[in-house]
Length: 100
Image (spheres, rainbow, N blue to C red):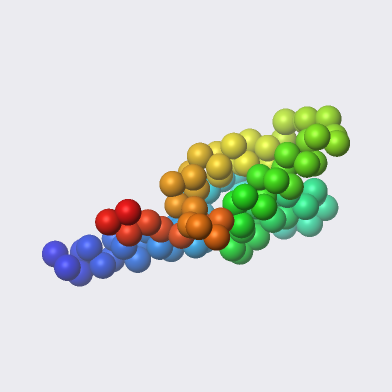
């Protein structure tokens, strides 16, 4: 039973830390698409994004630009919902302990 719990915990940690996991995004865009996208997009798909910084960059971008629905904006909405419960005090995506 302890081994199963450990394996499930490791699986969960892998999902939280892996930005290429399909749970984070509806569709995984190409690296080329990300490379030429706004900074908020690049930050969201980075290895260890800071969620409040991504939110701020997203809001700033769309305060200055017309909103256009893209795979990135759809992924952003999905990503925000998925990560909300896992953001630590530093704004990083970290799994919560059972006590939390």
